[in-house]
Structure formats: C-alpha cells, structure tokens
Length: 258
Image (cartoon, rainbow, N blue to C red; front, side, top):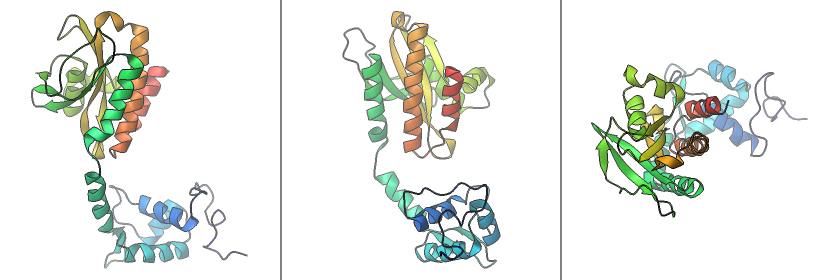
C-alpha cells in the first residue's frame, strides 16, 4: 500500500487534473508546483500551493526542499515561497541558444511553399515597417523585395498589424485587434495584395508581423482564407517557441473558421 502523499493519481484532490502519467510522478509534481507561481502570485504560502496544485502538504514540503536546494525555489523569512534564481540562469541559456531567425525561417519557408506566395516577417521601426526576413516562392510571377527594405507604416497589411498591436490605444486599428489579422489590396503597390498576422513574445510583446504577399489577382477570398489559416498556424507555433501567449491567436483563428 502506498503511503498518503506518495501516490500519483490517488494523491490528487478531487476536481484537479493529474500531472502527465508518462513522466516520473515526482518530476511532474515538481513542475506543477513551479507552475503555481505567476505574475499575480509571485509569493505563495504552503496552503496556497496546496490549493493551486491539489497536492498534499507533506508531498509539497518534500518537493519544495529539493527545489530549494537546486535553486528553483526560495523561502522568505515570513514562510512564503517564491521562484529562485536558477530559472533566470536557464532563461538566459535558452535565449542565447537560438536566434529569432532560427525560429521564423522554417515557418516562412513552409508558408511560401504551401501558398506559392512571398512570405515575410516585418518589424516595427518608428514610422516604418522593415522586412527582417523574407522567403520567395519558386513561381515566376511574385512580389520581389529584399530583406532590410523599409516601407511607410500606414500602408500594407503588415503595417496595420504592427500599428494595431504596438499602439493598442489607437482606435483606428480596433478592427484589426478585434479580428487578429489585416489585409491589404493595392495600398502600396496597386498590383500587390497581402495578408498579415501578429507574432508575440514573452509578456505579450509584439515581435513582428508574419505576412504573405503576391499579385492582386491571386488573392481571392477563397485563397486568402487558406492563407490566413496557414499564417495563424505558423504564428501560433512561432509565438509558442518564443515563449509568448498564443491564446489570442488561437481565438482569432477559431473566430475566422467559425
């Protein structure tokens, strides 16, 4: 018979989802304890951790002891717990282990391949939108501009996305924020159309605009629906890889499909 506080599923309180059964139970519980902390609750008492995780206090204390020794948790003088310094060290290692290009380029290549259009990632630079990364399709008729090119922010689908999510107080882009994407038909170039969605990073910071562009005649309503579906899928994955919250992208895609 397993002692109270040492079982995997029997230890959980009713109504609380059990940790993943595939991994070691103790590791799953330790991750669950770390996940109990957030921006609204950086300091937690033992009772609060128990309430948030559904674990018995005896198990929590045992795991907190190990987490504290490893630097993942620290205990303050008033008896409350908070995240320790070790996650910060791991965060810096994670940030230095990849470049933004490494995350985005595979998505840009995929988007260009399945759509047959030019895929780009634009960033905000004061009154400009700048092409940070770009992948051209193999077809002969295409939009051909280069990485590093900059265009006025007030034109194009990417400009609308960058403006909407960089300046959320601007009412001109309420519709873009509400739907989560933007389109453009011949605003900068009368023969070119584009569609764009945002990519977010940590703390909801806008990283840039993921965009597909091409000759206007190919951007029919049906084709744009397909493009938007693919763009949202890539934006969700890219946001997740960059440590951002992709829930608003998921909601926007569901609204589009619904």
